[in-house]
Image (cartoon, rainbow, N blue to C red; front, side, top):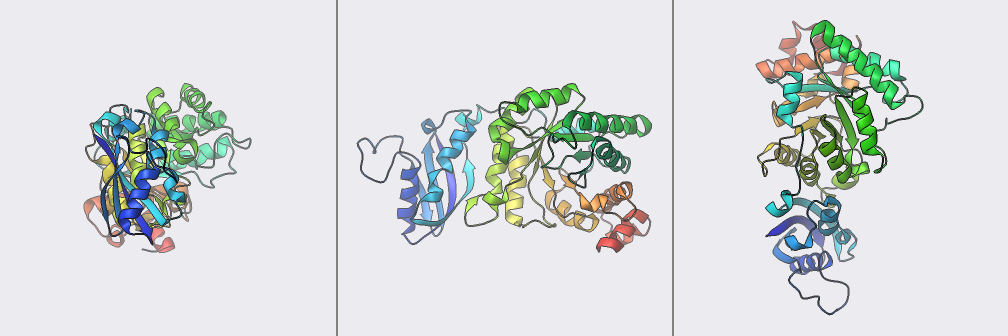
Amino acid sequence: MELIAKYHVETDLPIAKAAEAIAAEQSTGTWTEVRGADNPLAARVIRAEGTDVEIGFSEELFEPGNIPQYLSVVAGNLFGLGALKKVRLQDVIFPESLMRAHKGPRFGIEDARRILGVYDRPLVGTIVKPKVGLDPKGTARVAEEAVRGGLDLVKDDETLTNQSFCPLIPRLEAVMSSLDRVERETGKKAFYAVNVTTAGDQILERAEEAVDHGANMVMIDVLTAGFSALEVLSRNVKVPVHVHRTMHGAFTRDKAHGISMVVISRLVRMAGGTNLHTGSYMGKMAKETQENDMSRDALRNEWHGLKRVFPVASGGIYPAKVHGNLDGYGIDCIVQAGGGVHGHPDGTAAGARAMVQAVEAWQKKIPLQEYAKDHKELETALKYWGS
């Protein structure tokens, strides 16, 4: 069996020659003739047409369970080959033999829904804003207002970990105390994704300490911490794992060069994330509808029996942007707003209610402006940010 890697390639060489160069560089070849280069582990060119290249790599080239090593093969030195002007890893088809080495998510979409008791709608989340500068009590206050407004998830910013102005454990305890109070008073359950990203030899200990202090979800910046760090968390920590893609633009922004979000999505599901930021159909980030569609499907379609993962739409989202994102992602997603919640003229709780109302309007297939007539928080948001 083979692993099949799909690339977009721009080069002055004939595309078949460029494909051969990639296959050689990423398997048995080098810049000059050496003994034994022609052997059964040499990668083969499956297809080379236009700018599309597909390379087949023998399963024996890979160490099962070692995602860093997989990436060294399919996304290694080829980016530096002088003969290639641009090259982008578009997708990877993994053989069953490698997939068996990965357990995928401990907690998938269905598990997260069961914990919250929410089955019939998209989830709605927020990032605490301002993103840094609040102390633990301030963070907890914002989180409580968001959940009282109806949100299902509150997460740390990707840059907030264990800094002196807002230490992780005091912050966690303050937030969970506030969310517990909301649940006692209203019955509303919510996740708090506390960011445990740190050095590889400390991340599991930090996550376990967070769970010991009441965490019901942990968060990891997967591209800075590594896919193996995510896999360690998923296998050992008994709460869902929220996965942020910070730094992804270095790989994904140039549609002709780098690594696609589809590949990142597959690796996150393989490694065990529960939620993954995949991009928005409407928002502030650079958008690519086809790639969003493929990333969504990589997280949610049947794939070797692994549990399904929530795609998260985030980045510049406010109530008027909800419908466009839900049209793309459907019910099994998380739509998340930071400024689009906390920047509401009437405060965080009102901003949360406006987001929830926008989701309700989408589910009921009622135009936002019409639904806003009977929902003042949504009406204010549409007037303030536009519709």
